[in-house]
Length: 286
Image (tube, rainbow, N blue to C red; front, side, top):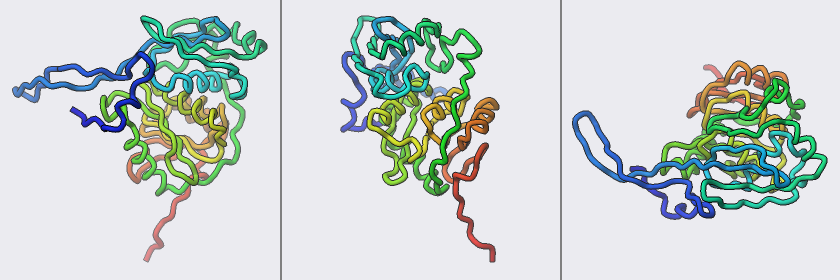
């Protein structure tokens, strides 16, 4: 069983819903059998409600749900600025959680026709989109951003893994992390869904007034189209993923000017688009 970090036990529970549970399971290694206790990540139905009207239900790890509400609202372009989320309240229900949000009336009227009143599954990034225009949204071009030392990228990925409290317990959740140009990895958000983890991170950063051109995004998942879309929608200029990108992700990153990096492991990585932001220092040949 994974060792439980002593100082982090309260950090992996929010309100009435725990983000993991413990139970006893049968473990087999060949013909050897033992029963032991282990930790299992939870996923809970979370209803995002705007101006008293339910919009979508997502299966989500019940942590950092205010960040999730704000991040989802920004990356889905329901609001354009964090200040437009006028109020947010997390409400416990017997079968899940409601994130009740208040947004300006003109934003709510635009939302009314988007047709996303359906369940979003754990890994879903396009859940609820009812038209091709909703599914394939192309964000505005990103800014110049900052150059990143390739050696720092590998160290930052290792630092992110060390900060994955819930994943250390369960081995079942994704993370999205922010690498600040001056302070290293400053913020990590975890969730059973990779898109949810990214929305939580963006919500947390937006709440603190982060300059999205002043750092870089790290994720412990593949770089799907939706991950690129969400990152670019708030002006992030570089996305480094631990796994591969999809063809559509590469296409979108190329179009909007985002540097897309995959297979980021140890000192290795593959740059798919806009390589000018990643700096490599090679030893001179003898």
